[in-house]
Amino acid sequence: MSYITTAELAERPGAREIAQTASLPHQMVRDDALMDATLRGLDRSAWTPEQIAAADAALARVQDAVAEAGALIDGHLVQRGYVLPIDLPAGSSGRSMVTVWARSITRYLLNKDRMSDESKDPVARDYRDALKLLGQLAAGKFSLGVDDPAATANASSTDVRFQGAETVFGRDQMRAFR
Image (cartoon, rainbow, N blue to C red):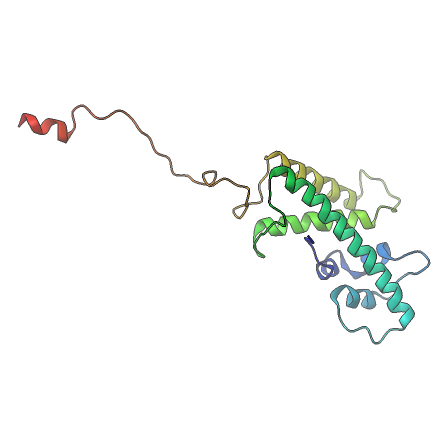
């Protein structure tokens, strides 16, 4: 299941970064507007067939990274006992959290050929954070929020009841002594 769409990737990190990281070295997408139109599924008739072919090749790499990120997330969700595909409401905090994880993992997969210091790279940091939280979710130490399907029914309840022995000198017992 896809937890992030290419249109969401066009919003953040943006068409420019996607074009730079998803394009093949011999087939670079140089026009950010073309990549944005390709990611969003808009009209691309203003560009040449060669440019469109390069954008389609980049889109295929993006879709592969999105599928790989979805498989990685599913692997962690299954460990916790979620039934896949997971059904979270569109505006829920759990859905947005899973989308953030999918974005971080997808960006890392597209940027894997990047030469940078892993300890200071924000893309690598986001990827490590996503994996850390996914590991905590799988271990049961993290929840997807109120709409979490794996949460037990009583886990979010604050209803507390005390039960003790029956009272000795209550109204019902003293009625006999009147």
